[in-house]
Image (cartoon, rainbow, N blue to C red):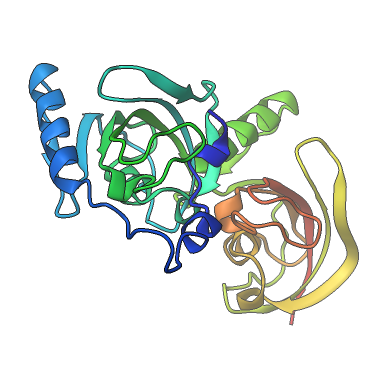
Length: 276
């Protein structure tokens, strides 16, 4: 199944909103009975939400927990109650904003943390509703075995940073936020705070060494820059230099920004010239 099978396509619903088309049929009663029968037949320990979604947590996970607006990476296998598979992802899963997916995913995925696994049993009104959708019949109950691989790319970013550190033989320190930093020279002057105005020379690049920005000296308030800089620059004093390895959650997040792809790990070689 391609990613588009999970996406909510607004045009599908809008195109059916006219006087010549019968109103959507409510499959809720049939779906509820079908899901309960499946749960009983397969001895599942499932929890029902007020919306009619059922979920099974086999492994809650231990990492970051998403919100309904998070960007997530999920692997899945989707099938009907007769066990017929209609699609599945690779082990690496697919990445998307939860807001772009069917309501069963929007509601169900946040019950898990990174590394979590389980089952979502989704009635039609939280799936594709009363209309056929790319081979999925109208009114279908959808069952997904899912694994939440990453939230806001944090698990994938952390693995990418650790690989970069190992490949380049760096001695780096990790903070609670997920930032990694390397102090080549601490410096001897004034140490900035997270609200200081500073002048910094830097070179920014991705883990493949492609440079996306650099400056011999830029001046700015640390409250005006990405969180990785707000947190990372105060580890140095004036004259200090080192490296900041910044996950997307402390950089530009899930969205492309000025040529930087969403979810990117950012690496900065920095020298703190002055605390202004």
